[in-house]
Image (cartoon, rainbow, N blue to C red; front, side, top):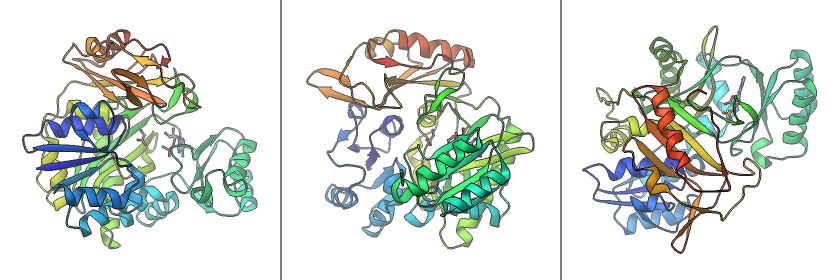
Length: 419
Ligand code: AMP
Ligand code: GLY
């Protein structure tokens, strides 16, 4: 088969690495890819947002299957356009991608079918939103309705902070149209977990769990980022809670989407908070998580490609995946300045030495080739994943590998997988 992966981050490097290992894959392309993905695939200079360009390329190169990494092209209808052109693609169409594209839509769907989630109200009017915040008090959470590149959520510890977030979205239009509507919701306390499942429109195949670490600093301090590391499985998610979340959150959402005539196909990612009253949904994503995927895929023993094809073909019933029982730890190496303006262009060396241990995988995110040199070119730059007999061993291996990487502009959290 001729396969095309869309995207250029660490998630897409992990996907490309897994797909390149499939005996079914004869040729792998990535658009636009990155220097790590280029070790697995032929990278083509097409932006992930270039829907017509991608459809034309896939048709011209007789691509059999397209795997879309990021949410924006899914929301823009890339899968609809590919399928209309006769090219099979993994991921939801635009109508089902609304689960991520509109938090208000997702919340209303949860309310309609009793999916446990934070109590909420939708607002377009700032004074009404502030009155609601004053009535409920802090802590309280303010979210831009639409896609805001991970920056649209404010977990406010004071009423004034929530009011400022309301103004930023509704008055200052800091998130543009994505923040013209907001959701104000109850603060949920508890450990977080990411639960991802392949979905074929009707059937659900849960993956092993993961936990992201969103704050920039050790001990979950500092501003939110796209994710500074992940572990799999999520330590707080016992198999009983995992099963409860699949039954109470993922399956009813999939059934509700099918019932409204917009069945969901692809990977459904439920961000959970494990409250004392059970797991509750904080958000749906309609794609693989980043960096969760970098922690999950090295644990996958089965071939990823047939599973993605089965999801697209409506064939997941009775499908099974085998997983490595060993836990994994993924540490993100970010460039100084991140999540603000990252320091770019510093040379990175030592990756070959760092991956000498076969239990270690390095996935590129924000890197670029400058002649023969590899240089930093983004906020999150590298992902270092290691497997181990225990989480502690996986953690030790990941940090041992990081110690071999030479890059003076980088930093990372030291507490992924435990201190
Ligand atoms: P999101 O961008 O929706 O994943 O939210 C970013 C982060 O904000 C999440 O990972 C949580 O840590 C936090 N968060 C979102 N919603 C809530 C909530 N209702 N209660 C507590 N924390 C939340
Ligand atoms: N790791 C969070 C996300 O992918 O949205």
